[in-house]
Image (cartoon, rainbow over all chains, first blue to last red; front, top):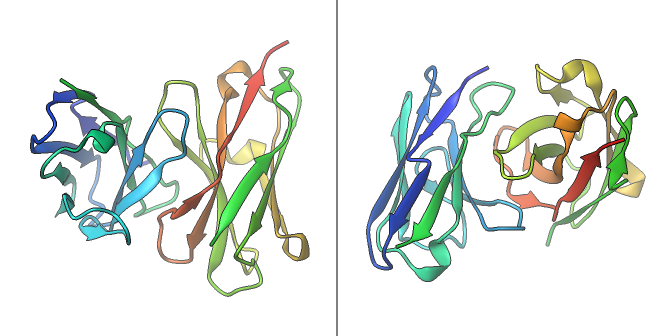
Length: 107
Length: 120
């Protein structure tokens, strides 16, 4: 299985901050990477696919980049609604593994 | 609008078989490209991909759980069923039903999830 490692595990930030979350794959996945946002008690929501493509309806303050084994999710100016847990997911090969998650907390 | 809803027992005993049903609307497994799958999440932990079935009955399973999983579809009923054999307390999780499209690799619609607890 391809292992996905996210960092940091927890991130504290203020509203308005620019934040970046990193996801590393144990082997190259080209750009077959997605990012999801999950709020407590809710299902995850797809934010970004193919490393840098914004899903329809997702605010433009979210962006993704990277290729190969290293990827980032950036939120340009944090809004109160953005405090949640974020997961990366590779879909280069079955099984489609997820990272362990990054919890974004209000400072 | 695509909606999915999971149903099944909230509590199962160790060694029992879990059967979960996903009932969906707004999409059909008779449509080329459509896929429906399952992802689970133990309490406070990360997501784990389990299985996927496509419109043409192509099935994919998590390699680590393949021997315990079976996914089937009932196209006229708009349902997908997942069975997990030999349940263990470590299988306690919220099980989500998800929609995808062949080749996309991502899950754009999710059910609300159903919590399954494994305990004697």
